[in-house]
Length: 609
Image 1 (cartoon, rainbow, N blue to C red):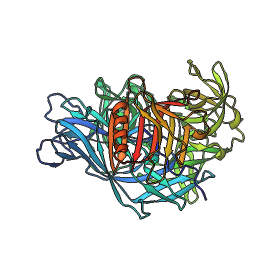
Image 2 (cartoon, rainbow, N blue to C red; image 1 turned 90 degrees about the vertical axis):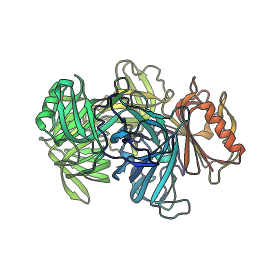
Image 3 (tube, rainbow, N blue to C red; image 1 turned 135 degrees about the vertical axis):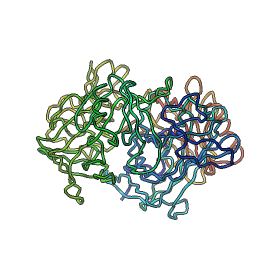
Image 4 (cartoon, one colour; image 1 turned 180 degrees about the horizontal axis):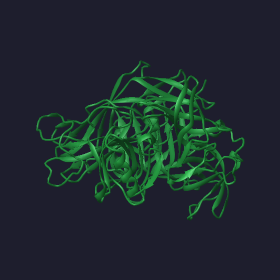
């Protein structure tokens, strides 16, 4: 058996862990402050400061990566450390896909914070990756000597010019990118060697998608908001703080399987009453320092409540029966497990809604092959996993399709698909849908296709057409051209690394990678399209954007140092290599120009031995 992934892969920016930290008072060298002063509505009159904690992960090679977070500690410039996590939540990082989830909210002493420590417990970890056939393989976590691991600690130092400065009334997000691929080497004996790599910077990018969940505390219709007692992931107990969620006239609600928009949703949420389970997704407004929800699920529409539920991608359909792969299984009562395959039965009484159109009733025919789906029902068999949703509820969620453009036209393109929801297209059976993966028809509007050309690797985000209705096979709400963003370069060498990783290393001309230095990993990933860097006409080069700003990090000796200036980052790498350090890996995220083989990146990570 061989795994369908590179031996070592680091992808900068693949995972965001936004920390909002809390404490009150104190001048000792170590503070443990949980459940402190209220941060629901922070003001400048408070004696404390507030920040908010979230976890996230962009798509990667792991199907599931479940560990416990056991410590979250910040270090202030005067040496005081603040422990902000009183509980040990279990987190499947692989399922936090292109969004961050709030972990905890509270208050912290005002001051300048320069770094911190995070601890992860792998004792009962569930880590699984795909084999060459796309099937799940369970991996045992080990250290560099092949021994089983338990708790791992990582120190993170913020850029000295941009620490986390917390003052009353101005909440901040401390964004920590946790790159699962960068942290893990998958071995041929079904083990995975773990060396955590997390990168922290103050405040995430504007527009980043965030999610918060927990029991409803209260509704404030006059201010178009409601308050939750935060319960991250499927946590049932513990004090993670309270959080005010703001809404707009266009916020979509699905409450107990019924759709609402704007004020009508708030009214229905109020009727549902305190302790109702809620999941809200949206963005943090850095102008008003508020979280604004775009979508809200509540009551029986929330996984882990009164019904069993599975979330994954539909790989085949026959009649009213569908098969889903890469699924998270939520049992009623909030226990969670990963199941690579679940069979689901739909029926005429299955209520169907679409994530971006909560008021529009859908039919079970809208559940087609390739659709990202959250479906509720009753688990009738655990092995093989079988869900009866004939009288249940199905939510059509945004779906990602990756491939290479074959043809373009006004409002339409065809694609040779390589992956759907990050699963290889070979797993999908399109019988009965009219779809052809090698000539997949995608409709779009509003000028989304501008600048996209034949042979470009592209990601389409949207919804699959109803079963049997193609063409088109898919309607895109977003088209991502990897010439502009989200292309990944990953190059790695075996321990103890190499002193000859670069043919060039300076802030002006960028980092020119030396592919003749016996690297064991050398790839360009553009969604589902993977290219061997050795096939390029030119040596791959990594340059910073025009202003030279971004998040650039160096991992050495279990400590990550973050730089916001590409120039400072390059100087630091040069100095460390001059002191004898060797390069184990370089990983960068950005827009890739195939004519020059240059990646313009504001996210670069280097691993040194």
